[in-house]
Length: 100
Image (cartoon, rainbow, N blue to C red; front, side):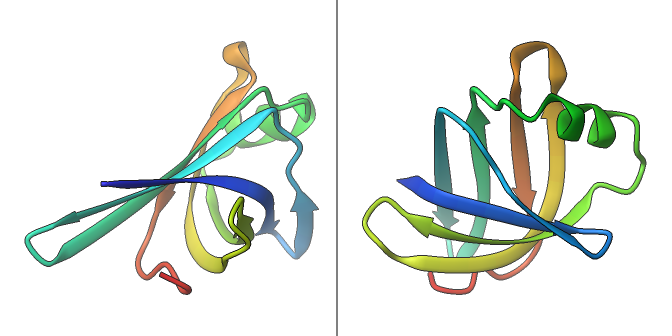
């Protein structure tokens, strides 16, 4: 398991690209016997309306682009899971994490 801090992260959802605002974000990449899965943890999100939008929607698929704290760019698709009460979210990866 490898963890990377995320310096910048944007999601594309319903023809709109939104730069996410957060206190901390981490990309976690898990490689287990040749199979890789990944997810992103976001804490301290200030975009309450965005969290509420995803909380009330059944369509939570997003595409995303980001840059790790070390300057490594990546892009992928995933599912945005908000936690409105804690001003947080997780993005569960779906498929390849381009750049890794």
